[in-house]
Amino acid sequence: MLDKRTQLLLSLVALAMMPFLSGCLLAAAGVAGAATVAYVEGEIKTTLQATPPQVAAATNSAFKQMGIAVISSNSTTVDGRVEGRNAADKKIAVTIASEGDKASRVAIRVGTFGDESMSRQILDKIKSNL
Image 1 (cartoon, rainbow, N blue to C red):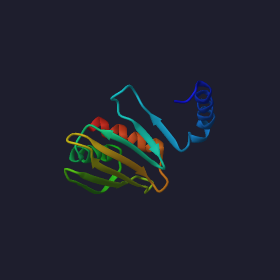
Image 2 (cartoon, one colour):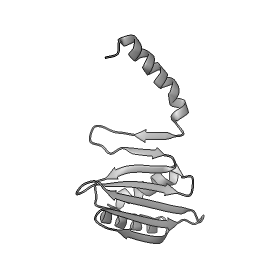
Image 3 (spheres, rainbow, N blue to C red):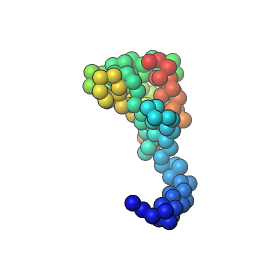
Image 4 (cartoon, rainbow, N blue to C red):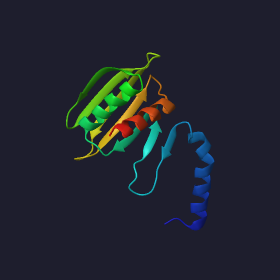
């Protein structure tokens, strides 16, 4: 166990580092049991309570609703991938991997370097289609 003085020092160092981390990692977490959404290295990542085929179908619907042309779409019971292009011809890729019977890990990347705002919009639209 760390003594209180060391704990305080580590807490202060962590707080001092937060401004430098804001561009690299943004995470929003709710109460226990709520899904975590993280934007890391140009991708938004989260877990959704749906199978890969359900997430792929919801993604196809989301793309159509947002005016994103679906280039390719495939899914199995263990994984999936949906790719599209928006009006600015940016590639959008949604990668899906099973995490149990009724959960899937989802990663969304817009363009080469990522676009957090657009990725979040796509994620919200996928969720509304599930």
